Image 1 (cartoon, rainbow, N blue to C red):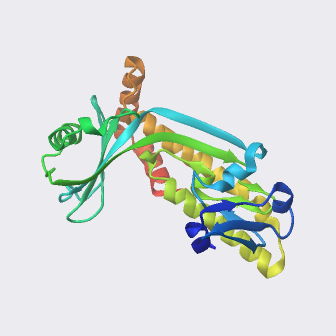
Image 2 (image 1 turned 90 degrees about the horizontal axis):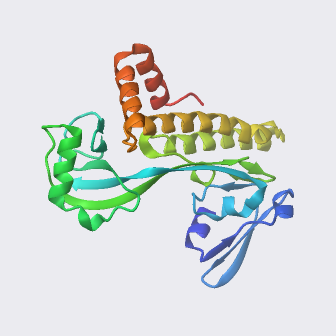
Length: 271
């Protein structure tokens, strides 16, 4: 089914009555021809801009927050400055070094959501990275890619309607600061696979019925952590808010209990 959907020119999910039936039908066009796939279930794993969540319309509630900053992403042909990730909170804004390969580095700089990439020359990018990361080992190199990523949090509830199940970015988005996006998508699939196995082995629907509640419990915990990391490490432009966040970071770095909490959530809560 993945191959069909990726190559199709348009895809239509079942109407509400079909989603609630025992045999929903996925319809799509490919090379100008109409096709239909009869399903037991439909897993909506088609991302934030897919048709799955849109098909449910007002049958779900969507909780959303947009942040007043974004990330300037940089992929460079340059060796990594350290063997560990580097998160930095600087008065000029957040910065991050993320692993890629021995000869390539991935960096991020806090910027405005409407940032003009034309204003970011190679010299400015490397100068700003050195300033914010404070790493003497940072080596410049050829820029391979630059982009601006908006920061937002989104959760759709419930993640199931009839025979349609939302998973991954189709059901929720987290700001990338906490590195939870792929982790949450994997946990959704984990819960769905368990539920489908139970149904196909013994016609037991209990896993399907609990999927949304079980997945959302983990989603909201990850949303809380991602919001917390984002709020603590970014500059907000409000003097009081920024001073409080700086104090919060200083507390985390000085407390074993706070560091344990951060580590527990960053590594990933149990499925």
